Length: 224
Ligand SMILES: [Mg+2]
Image 1 (cartoon, rainbow, N blue to C red):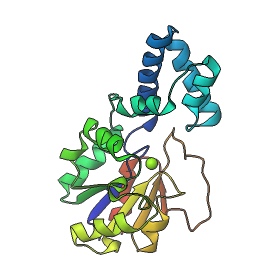
Image 2: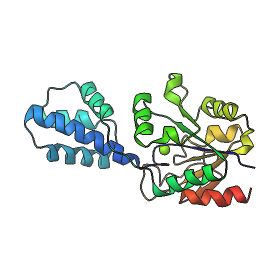
Image 3: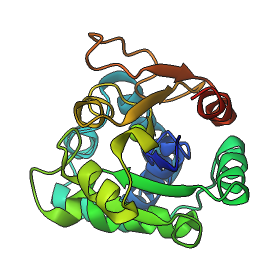
Image 4: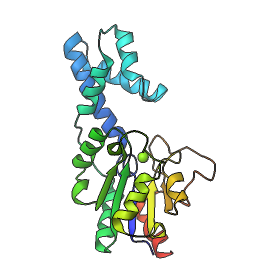
């Protein structure tokens, strides 16, 4: 029987791009006032580069194109300090309420820069709702998913068997392989938007179940 539902954060419980866009706006605002260029122009260019090349080198490209004499690390810290208003997906709220109503337990395991991840968690109000939150970056380097440490700590915290847990995430490259190795049930959520919705990997990376709305987890649990 499933007792604990463990979630990934980004693109599983909320739409991460809203966070990214909020960060771009802060950086565009800073550069705009320093170099007297339109915020919208800079912001739109960030989006274009994101669509074309993904994250990673966006601020380097912006500085190069505009000949800004800027320390990119400074821009990264402005991006990370941004506190955009975030909102949970509707079905995230529904399933978290359902978990509470059914006396089940909830957890989050999330990778990413710890300061940023905790800000997101706070902004989404998850500290008050989720029973155990692990930001893998708090362990130090090398413990991000698929490393098994966070999954094992989660099981120990709730004092349950892996089979009594389910991990729900969106990214097959790292969300399921570690969880499966220790016997945690796995569910992939595919949403309308997100960086990994089209990823198709070898079966050892894939979750046992695929869903399109978090409420579908109820059926999986009832059929368990
Ligand atoms: Mg994710």
